[in-house]
Length: 280
Image (cartoon, rainbow, N blue to C red; front, side):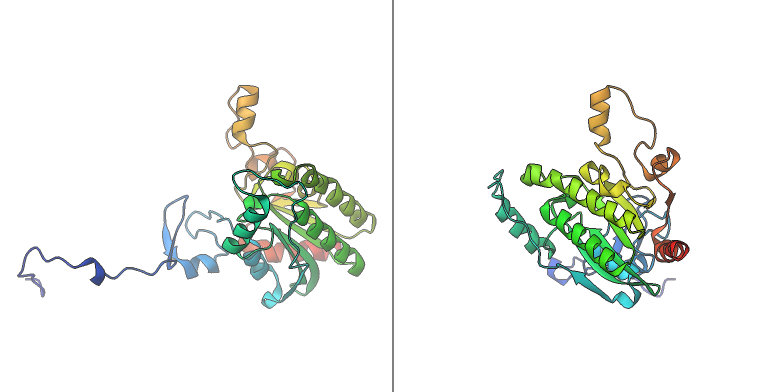
């Protein structure tokens, strides 16, 4: 006989008396659907302990993963976008910027900082997809350019972590000019013999792929990242044919010679320091 027997039937608990798990306590992998504690997910560098799915993360998480003791100095933290074209779609561009700043706590789609990775001085620019799809506008190009300038002045390596939907349409030609500006700055870095490593994360597309994301001395990626210029749907509709399996995945791009290697995020810090040690 069970030690507990319910005598009364049809017991109902009022909604206000029900206890629920606090929001954010558990993480469910969108790939394999396994649930895990958010603490475990964070310890695994925001990857699934079951299937190794790499969750999309932002600049703050990358800074915490890479910089020793999470100590870094951010460059040009308060730089924000203007409105050179007086652009309006469903809302005015300045209003969209302000709303996104309030929602994300970010000033734009990239942050740049310098610090140490396993005792190696480095400058890191990391993009945030949560800020208007990680779109590349004037501020993104300027922050990356200034980060490269800092690397040049101090003769230290530069790491670019890309995550973007492409150019920012609200800035039109001003956005496209960032491709040329960042590429020219990277040419100066190459002339000085200072290492540039480009890390492509999910997704890296559009003008970002067509410029600084593919110009690294080493182009590396996280597993499963979407990498391409136009999206698969646009290409499929343009050529009128089905695309190969896994088209534009990091693994497909690696197989076709556009990447040097794929690195698991849990190993990223050690791989970077080993690579930089060889280049020193």
